[in-house]
Amino acid sequence: MAKYSKKAGDKVEKAMHEMKRGKLKSGRSGKKVTSRKQAIAIGLSEARERGAKVPKKAASKSAAPGRTKAAKRAKATSSRTKATASKSARGVKKATTRTTKAARGTKRATSTASRTRSKAAASKSARSKKSATSARSRSKSK
Image (cartoon, rainbow, N blue to C red; front, side, top):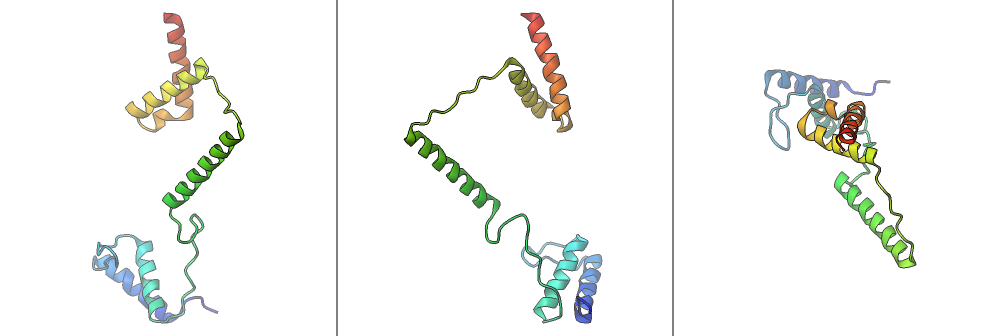
């Protein structure tokens, strides 16, 4: 049994034709559609509106329905602050960490590389090479 009706196929075909001619516009912004996938999505959406046989939209796997990335981030931050507050209320001391010279060199190399060069220059291997050479030069100069 077919997933899509003939009517749905015709709508998609019409949307693709309009997209190729530069006539297909996005519904919300009114901008010209250039993506093939977007043209297909518009065609299927129009077919759904007309009552054609089209499968339901797939649920988004990355985000929960109705929740944006910003909302997720805010929720995570608030739960972290609650945990910290409850620990401090119980008298739990925060563990202090000491940064080694090598770690400081890596941090310095990373920030320099990300500011001055491309992302490839700030890769893990590039950072480790840079930190090793900079640490060596600092130890020689002292």
